[in-house]
Image 1 (tube, helix red, strand yellow):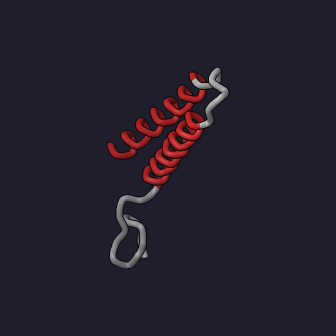
Image 2 (image 1 turned 60 degrees about the vertical axis):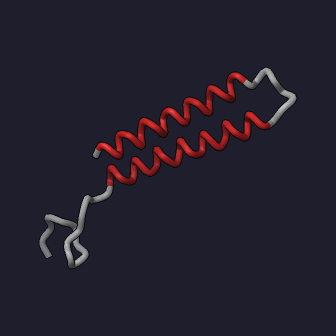
Image 3 (image 1 turned 180 degrees about the vertical axis):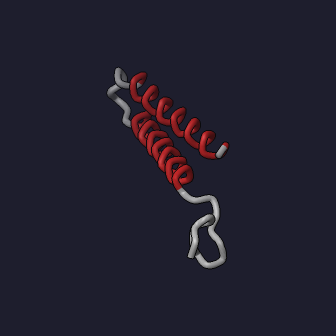
Length: 73
């Protein structure tokens, strides 16, 4: 479970950094490069948050028959 918390925190930080880059560069309308960087950082942050959500909801292990651990056949 610690990897889920780490992924979630890093994803949130990446989203916030991307939004801050966008906010600070709104006044500089002459260049589009900061917006590309901010968009890429936002996509990475969203991807990390999705991966954390999938890992939190997936079962930890399955037995040899392909069933979820703890269930009866």
